[in-house]
Amino acid sequence: MAAIERRRALFDGLAVVGKALGSPRRLELMDLLAQGERTVESLARTADMGLTSVSAHLQVLKLANLVATRREGTKVYYRLAGDDVADVYDRLRTVALHRSADVDRARAAYLGLPGDSEVGTLSREELVELMRNEQVTLLDVRPCEEYRAGHIPGAVSVPLSALPDDAKLLRKAQQVVTYCRGSFCVMAHDAVRLLAASGVAARRLEDGMLEWRTHGHPVETGLVENREVENGEVSV
Image (cartoon, rainbow, N blue to C red; front, side, top):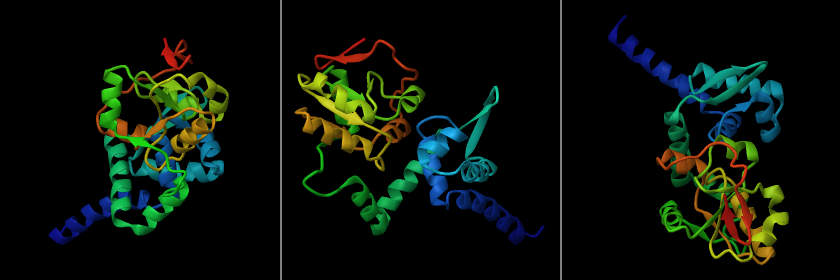
């Protein structure tokens, strides 16, 4: 094989990965898989997509070695193939935000930014400092299955749908922080707004679980059965 053919074969292989990342629906699925492993049924339900469509997109991702699987009984669970895949997805979003005005505008419209309803934020570094000094009540407002797959240590699982009922328990908390999937996720924004409507001052983490993981911060797994919010404090 001539040198030029070998070179083109190399870039042909690279294009397979690029093509797998070139579908908005596959990027949505990667966004969900960045939170933890899922079945096809769970992905279809959460992404509001058909089972056949989700299966086809997952096969493209699998052929590009971007996702891996495991079988448990009759169920097949999909996950990102490694931390490097999560990092590529994180970097793709960062570049898109910096380089594409369309992406920036679409994100702002989805999250309700800017405007009077914008909520206060804090950085990962600021959150780490609050956690170190035990000065924060940290709320994970993602669905429970995502919390079980991996969450920030010490966080309480309070899915967004349950937040209106639990808000009254947080009125005495001095520092309430919410987080969700990442910088493209609206749940933490909505959580802060719901809490404000119930008289609870809160802020959101500026990004979310994806960035927390890809920047090397510790992750806790499983559902902490005895962790709950009581009188504004986390009890374990």
